[in-house]
Length: 275
Image (cartoon, rainbow, N blue to C red; front, side, top):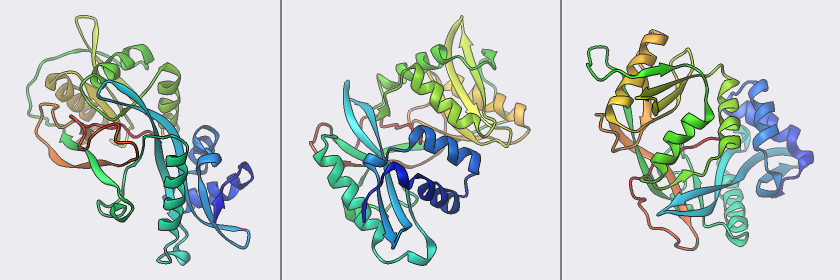
């Protein structure tokens, strides 16, 4: 068991495709943009990579402060090597590395709520799953279907002022995030009120929503329902718990805090996860 190197990329990419059933095109793009071997660890059987846990350095905003954080992703074990404690050992190595490297916390999006509890992870942000409604009446907004990083960041940064735990984004990062989604033919809609951006949604033709951000309940409802019209199917998406729409509440992000720079649960916690 050791830290990964750039020479392990081909094997790590193959494990990612096998376990997460991603397309080779997306995996290739992801590893070009998101692979940080210096923050990732793997288990090997002879020279064969059999399990891995990847880390990516980010910054998050909590209580008005920028904090260095480690996003953990790609935690995976080949099926024939499961139930041997490999994941727990790799995660422990990555966590110790992050702690010694000066990160304030590790965070992740777990598959099941209790999977990482033994390592100290705790729920830090809940979300709502909200739905489109063909019978709903709401305000109308001007609509653009052109990707515009400045308009979208205006909405994103406004939400950051009131929702802890969101990743710090600039225009370059948002462009990279959208390129992630564009591999799967993502589309965007931006809602405007009086010439000012009020919300945006990133989605694909199959109806999956990658991101939904808005400043009012009406903007959330408008974007959901317009996306349903565009795709011809019901739309559901993640939104903050204070979005003003009804929905099903469940956990979203889990954190392991090292320096107690912030408290859990986070105030209005809403962490966007962009792998």
